[in-house]
Image (cartoon, rainbow, N blue to C red; front, side):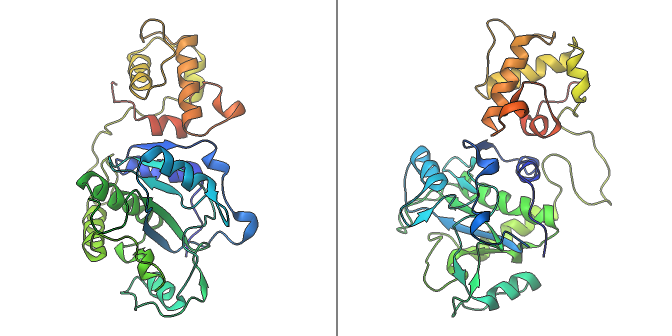
Length: 296
C-alpha cells in the first residue's frame, strides 16, 4: 500500500520515464475525493476508451458524462504515445471489482479470474485510458503500446512495485472487456523489462554507475530572478518554443528577459498551474517537466 503521488510527483515520474505529457485544463485539482477515499493506492489499471480522436476523448475523460462525472481516469494515452493528464486524485475509472484480485495485486502475484464486484477500485488504482475503439479491429500503434508500458512503469517505479501491480479493467471485473486488442501478459513483460533497466533520464538502482543527466539540472528559482545571461537561458527558450509556448518577437537568446518569463508562464499554464504558480518564474516541478537539454 502507498500514499498517492502528488500531482507534481506524478508528472515528474511520467516525464522521467521518457513520456511526452500534456496537462489538460486544471487537472491538478480535478478529482472525486469528495465522493470517497483516494488511497492507499496499490496498482495501475489500463482501459480503452471506445472513442476515436484525441481532443474529443481528452475532453470526455476530463468532463465525464451524465451519470458518470469526470475525471474518468488520470491520464489519456493517445495514438502517438502522448499522455494527457486529466485528473489527480480519485477518478471514476475502475468501479467495483473483486477483492481477491486486489489482494493479489497487493501481494504482486498472478490474479484470479474476477467473480465478485465487492471492492471499490477507484480508491486503490491509478487509471490510464488508451484511445481505441475496442472493437478488436482498431490498431494499437507501437508508440501507444510503449507509452502504456512506460506510464505503468513510471508509477511502479515511483512506488517500488513490480509488473504484477498493473492489471486490465477486464482483470478487475467480469463486466468489462477492456483493453481489447493486446495481451496483458505481454504488456506486463514489457513493463518488467523497463523496470529492470534504468529510466531514460538516468535513474535506476544504487548499484549502477552514475552518469551525467541528459537534462540541465534546475539552477534554482533565485537564479532566474537575477536575470542571468547564460546558454541555459537559450536552451530553455528553445524548449519553450518547441512546446508551443513562445511569446518571443525575436530570439530566444542567452539573456533572461520578460519574453522568457511570459513564455515560461505559458508553459506553467500548459501544465495546469494557475495564479501565482504560473507567474513565469521557473520552479523545480515545471523545470523537470520541460526537460531542457544539458548545456553545462
